[in-house]
Length: 209
Image (cartoon, rainbow, N blue to C red; front, side, top):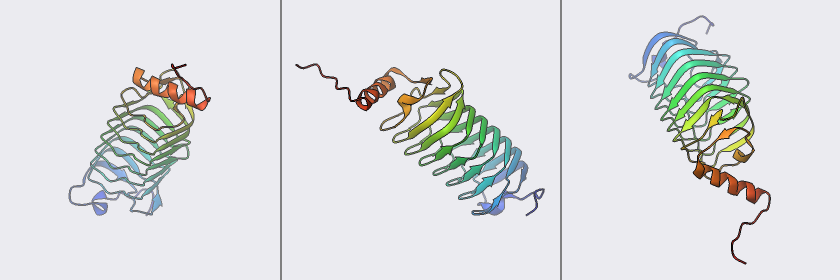
């Protein structure tokens, strides 16, 4: 497939797929190539297991689509909206950048975010159970009413105070949150993080004699 060939995503999904705008390099599972979208709409698309390498997505909406276990490498997404999508097991790697991207009602359990940048990204009612976030940079990232149960955070860099806003989300059994400088949480979450810090330092809190 040449880099300038336009491919109809309908060949990758069922009859519900809708494609408007310009899409280049649509790839089936296991195929490695750039996938570029501009001013496009993907509905019911099936990109399960695809590897998206050095792609460029802009002004694109993705609705009700299967992107489970997709692997994103050296890809830039700007002004992209994902809604009601299954991204379970997604891998975001190798300097991939998300700018002004919104995820709404998306499944992101077991996803892996490593060596990437999130800039003005919103997660609304998303599920991140057992996901891993490491060696990444965030600015103006909000995760309202999302579920991070069992997630792991390691070597997170925030551009400023409050640049990762977890207020209203579930953070049970997470690890690494107490070490994120500039994290924004609510009072209930603060109590849980404080208890984790005390336990990590072997501090026992007891009121009885």
